Length: 59
Picture 1 (cartoon, rainbow, N blue to C red):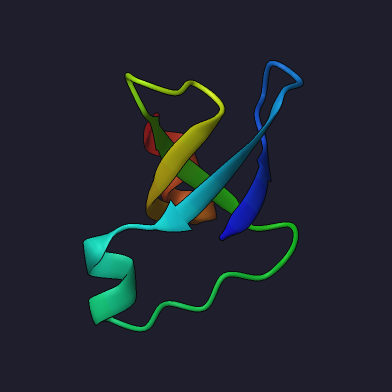
Picture 2 (picture 1 turned 120 degrees about the vertical axis):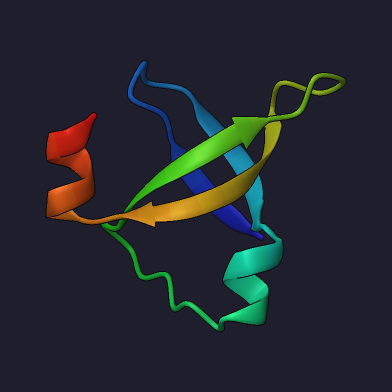
């Protein structure tokens, strides 16, 4: 489980999604990630991908 600070200022608990676990992607403090929030509990979520500088420019 990871603590993720959202852009809006909130903090949630999130776990690594399927592809991140299968590909063994390392997440370190300060990484920007894309999070999908749970519909049932908005204080929890799933980390979908780690964002790079190139990915952020596309968004």
